[in-house]
Image 1 (cartoon, rainbow, N blue to C red):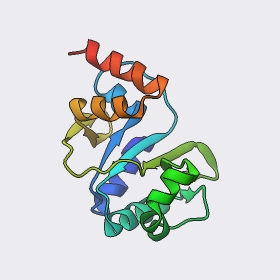
Image 2 (image 1 turned 90 degrees about the vertical axis):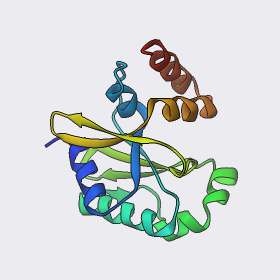
Image 3 (image 1 turned 30 degrees about the horizontal axis):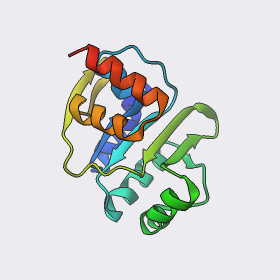
Length: 154
């Protein structure tokens, strides 16, 4: 089973309200894009964030920072504004290609997700429209290149 399928399965089993964003989402929408880590956005509430943390830990992933879901939830604005932290990274200490970023600068609330079938199962992905809007807001060069690639598919 692929790492993406294992992550999606663990998040689904834990009842996490999430969507894949980033390079994997761009690729699943049909644009060629290489990436190593899986980026997700969650519905922003403490229970959901704690469930996501537990699901990732159940896969052997550990937080790259000495923080917990509770502290990330409580100090979100501080982390974003003063520490330039927009994503909370989890990694597998035995296989550094297995990484998941929870994007803390975005909230899934009000965004549309779709279920996309992969060779190893279904995964929840942010809709193309919401993915484009999120990437435009970030303004980073790779995100703007992703927007261009996604818009060419329409």
